[in-house]
Image (cartoon, rainbow over the protein chains, first blue to last red):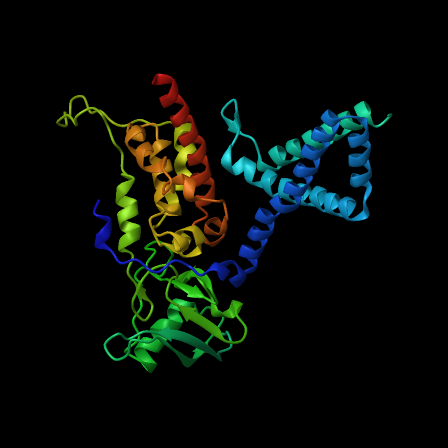
Length: 131
Length: 250
């Protein structure tokens, strides 16, 4: 196919996503990666601190208790839940599940994923909640 | 028969007449409307009664031909499926986004047609077609279950609204785009087809399924509820499988 045969427009400007509410919501979904990046770096620092010894570990625990760090990590939790909510809705559209020739209703797949989140959270609290 | 009240509404149309001016401009029209007036009716009224220089595309008036796509207040819509009763205040009509404008509301869709042709959106059969034998007619048989796998994706009318909704296509027009990938997926899912291998080469590249970031606006604006975003992202799963299988086969 000769790709030069038709006209091309210049690409969209960088502020394209400000034009519509739908696009802003999409950018919000994509931006959830920023607080999550902070949380991931915190975890990584925690592992390094663990390797370096007790003093370093105590320092990391103290760092995690700073109000700004707590707020940022709460933001990361909210962001991950929001991202999960959007992702779970998209999942049945990307991977439509069929059982014995019948397709599972989207709502069942979404509910199943939230049930998974609750199960993992309960397991987490059972394992670590008593410490 | 028509007991509905007739009122007047104003619509603004983005005009572009390259013969007389290189710049586009807005033009306002006041026209009589009732509850049943579609945007296409309004454009026809302008053309017939107010301003014969206005150019736009249309044909079927019933959301089958896919020719009357325009931007209505910034959102791609079919003129025949958009009713002025749903709008208050000024209604701004522009040509479909992300396509070069030829004149007024008429855009050049050549690039969409190129992308469409690139994915071979037709049944591909390895076996040569045999001459028809009335004594032993051979038909392509398909069960309702096999039909159900792709039917939703076969409802595409090639109106191009999804391309105007897709920022990735706006950023990079080489992206095959929602409708072309959806039709490729529709034929890949068809039990009568054997062309998946040929299509995968087109789909499984950066300008294929991987340019999509699931913005999802294409599915919101689709007038036939095809859900192209679902098809494109199912295509990503298929492309990933295709890559893995190719890896193991060496």
